[in-house]
Length: 319
Image (tube, rainbow, N blue to C red; front, side):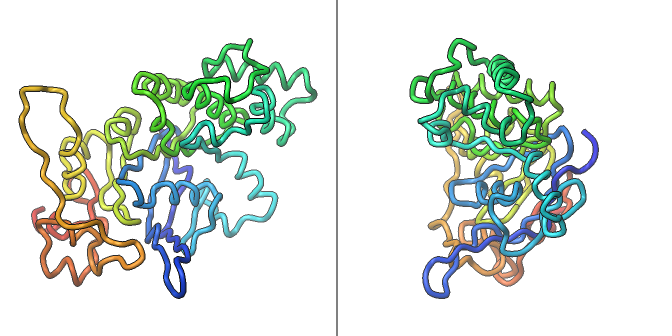
């Protein structure tokens, strides 16, 4: 891993939700993704993970804040620079069936980005490149003229990955790429992503609510709650020594394969807060058993605490 490839600076995104009401999907997020690195984003459904991923590659415009690619902000790029940037940033979507045009064959699906960017000189060269990509992701070449409905979920996801890597991007946002797949197929897709990363020096922003999957593939992890990053750090450090109460609750909720362990995961207090009317101060305070008056009046900021950065007043006071 080397320099910073993609960076978010104080990103926020609000979606209209009626008259003078907004859903605060992402609220003041800052993070960096380095070249050749996998940054995992984990959190419960509705915390803003997918919205953040789409903002990071320019599919959604932020309400405020900046995204920088190789040190230059999207907002400062001219048309040609923005277009070139789009080629470097690709995405693998959660539902491999919905993300593929059912009227197009595998050949045409994978060839589409090659033809859009004029990577190959003609149809024959394009088809050869498509076959190479199919081989790279483990889809037999004899399936070249099949349609998406003729494949399994795992094969469709492999086709989506082939489309994403076709134009040699620098970074791929993987938005829950294994959540719709069987466990055995999940492992195959994760191994494929790691192998492609090794061969092509790819960077990943890997979004998932499955903590075990995130731990398996990520170099660093950021934990999101209600549109904010509450803890981030190297994967093993964060999993071995979680400091934010929400991170601890997430890890305790993971089922343990050891039948001799009879520990029961602690339950979060109350109901999840609303993204339309988030609580004052710390967004997690309404569910946190350690919340104090300070948590209601002052929003914690990410600060270095041990091996991770944590947004929690209790953690600051204990270090």
